[in-house]
Length: 347
Image (cartoon, rainbow, N blue to C red; front, side, top):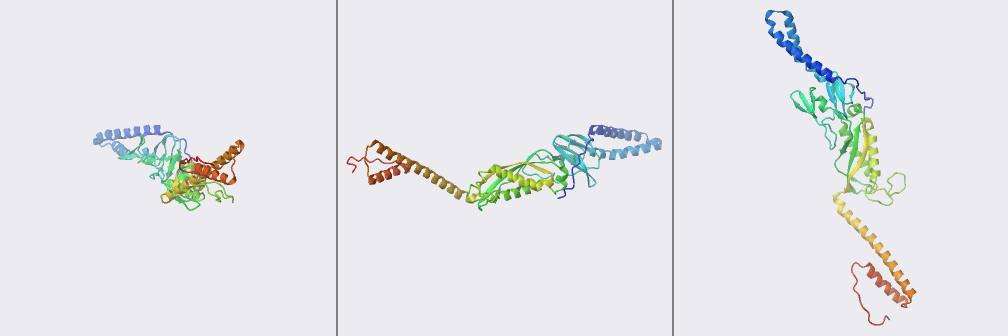
């Protein structure tokens, strides 16, 4: 990338109102001069003929100075070139007059991504462009070639990426970004919006493949050689920050700053979603059963201790085993127990 081009801010050209009034006055004078001299050409006065030709020429070419009028609102910039050479950037809001032969340059002007903050292209009516309430006589350049300096949000489409275990995962990321160096943005890369979009996709793939979807044993996600509990689902802030840093490292030379990055969608790919759901359900059932068994064993121990303390019944080892078995069946069963009344002797 061409990182040698540095931004130069053009200052001291906020005289658009004065220039416009002067050019309109000259245009009006030229029109009146054409009418006046046309009515007095019959006398053969050469002075009138010269004045008539001069007024005709100005009426024909007097629109050229209007091309130097540029209107900027807060949060907008305009990169100007003169015969292919970069001369500077208009960044502050105001009504400017610059060299009429300067042209605005923005190769990404017509690129519309899934993002906010793009400056809408102007609607041309003849030689006049109406853009966001502004009236421009510069052939639409100052309307369609503006660069937004606001923080914009790029939301690329969902991507299918394999996690560290090889499971396909669908993920979408929203990236907040802004242009900090307009010269690098338009000259260092061919199209800074498409370049940013591509780097976002690449960064997401590079980071997601380092993490499992859920916490998994014996997986190193930090690169320190030690297993940790990092995961896409449980460490979203950490993953988002790594994605942000990855993107920023790629777009430093393009005059772009990554303000923030957030994961907006995360799920298993459809082809394995059902199987992974069954796996999660099975793990939940196992955990629940373990909790139930632990509780049941505690209740059986408590029951035996209380019977011994109260000396209500003297149970031998065989009867204790039968009692423990019955209590565990009752406490761990999925259905309500059916009571059986023993009216005879315990033995």
